[in-house]
Image 1: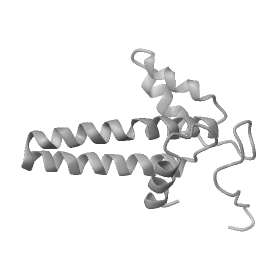
Image 2: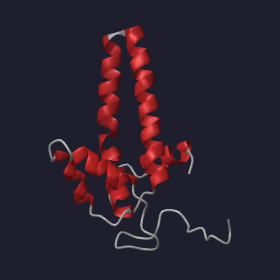
Image 3: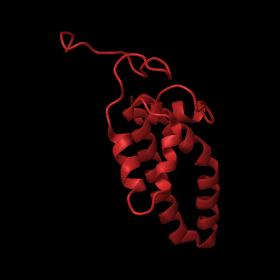
Image 4: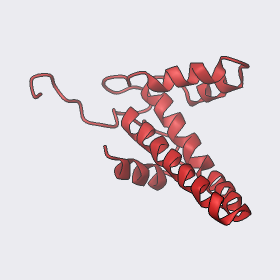
Length: 125
């Protein structure tokens, strides 16, 4: 999955909390967001306070898709989307969530559906 495909998939599934999202979809989405906020930061240095308004609007517009793709990514690892609340644990919650998001997805179907990408056999590679 490419960066453009990941962004298109996440935005198309804007508030879809069902199903699964693979690592590529999740991390390419976050790469696009980081690049967007870097660009907004550069813009802010030129236009001042208007850049902060743009940053706030982008943050609001991407809150739901961020949450949805995170829940789908947790589903891919075989965990409930409620695991996203582990970030509320002081000091280590965000680290625990990061580790869960970095884990490989379950091979084959799980209770949240089929794998987001077709299985590639070792013989085919």
